[in-house]
Image (cartoon, rainbow, N blue to C red; front, side, top):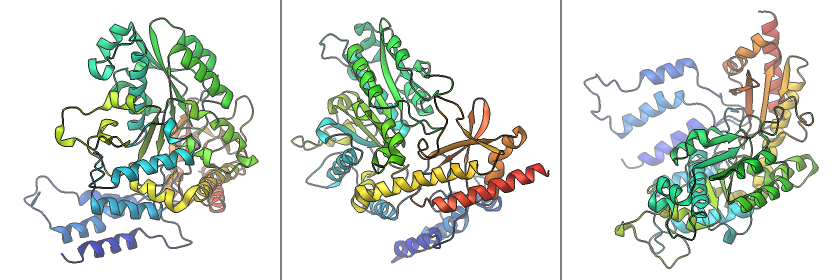
Length: 505
């Protein structure tokens, strides 16, 4: 087996490489998917689980499985979901993670530097995103992504809003349980107040025992449902025997728009939360990266929408989105490590004891998992490699490309319409668009098949969505390969051809 890994890695890189000036397919062909599916083990076969050995297995992976994978990392036009590519330095770092296979769940400073690297990466992220000093965010950890981070956020919020009503008791939800703690605190209901919150928020509410029905949508208006109605929030906070978590979307998954419009909104929410003992959680999975954009007029609207988010109690961020590190990679920040510890403490495991003289807590006591990958290393590598200037340029390319796509859609005449097309002021692709573009065909018949037609062409890939009860197309630019000129030309050429073909069908 001498040289097996080296040879395999060389072939993987050759397979995944993209020739400069060319574009990888966004999706595998149906024939390749069919071949990959047919190559999967047959549980009824006599050789099932007999073992192929490393060499033949690698051949199977490269010849059968790899051709059936999509191009989200290799194509600068994979615009479905909000799926970032992987920067080369992040891929290299992730290979190191696999090669050295560190267990980063226990802080063991005399045995490995891993947890200190993680702490350094989290501190750099705070400064990159202008969230304040690390001392202001004692609770910080890595998790799987938005769902895991939203679970952490709601769990910490649940802990805080109940504990604040336990009249000085040392008891906590983590210790005595949700039902008993609520009874002692005189709480009959815990509600999550949001506006077009991500679907993972409802999932998280179910996991932490609040229930999906606890999530209440408080849209500012029918025209701007992504905005949070702060007057409605204030009314909800005044309800008797009800504790509240305020969940702010930055940004909303369909439109990329933000729940707050400026620092005044966040300052008012902070005052209300302090007055009524509520918790503010920001789902900043991708929107918070707008804080890294250059301080220029063309980005002023995005900077304003992000202003004040640092006033929250907790925040989730996805590294595998705009930071362009490999799946899975989520980041969570909260004000006090004691809040995380109260919920996630891993007791009665003497063999997992760590150096308790350090400022760094063992991650197993402040997060969901007792075991996870060294997720921090690719983030650390990207921050060290690109620095704030490089990451700012990357974010700028994404935004400029998304705005170029919006211009391409609008340049197709009356065939397509950008969404949302109503609100307090008309949508401006020069100011409002971050990295998400939502649109539809004006012809209802074409609109029903538009996502399919785009993806069948395999030049660019989009997600299907819905707006105002009708199908819509969502484009999310989140790759370091973003190219505004290519995106404009590709989208305009493709949409023009699709609408022409539809007219003559």
